[in-house]
Image (tube, rainbow, N blue to C red; front, side, top):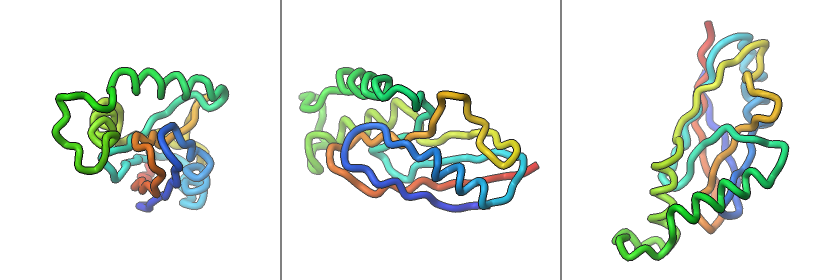
Length: 136
């Protein structure tokens, strides 16, 4: 089964869409398989991360922003704004796809794990994530 999820963001940060993914998998009616996710953008990424304590997500965002600094003199791709090239680098350093096992009709996430779209641009956007569910 193939589909698409839309995640609305209002700026940089990790945007959880675990519930939307679980609903999509549940509607597919597949008991056991593998769900693959692919973000269809070059300035956003996907991560499985802690969803209990928001400070973990804030720390990740702060660390990555310190690693990839806006306004670096090396950047020549600046037409779309000062946050665009850093967003491309951040997406290249993280993941654009995820594969999560499915059992009993649900993604096999751990107790504190959630699925997040990591928005690397300052402005909000509607991000599209392609979803493919294969079954045994």
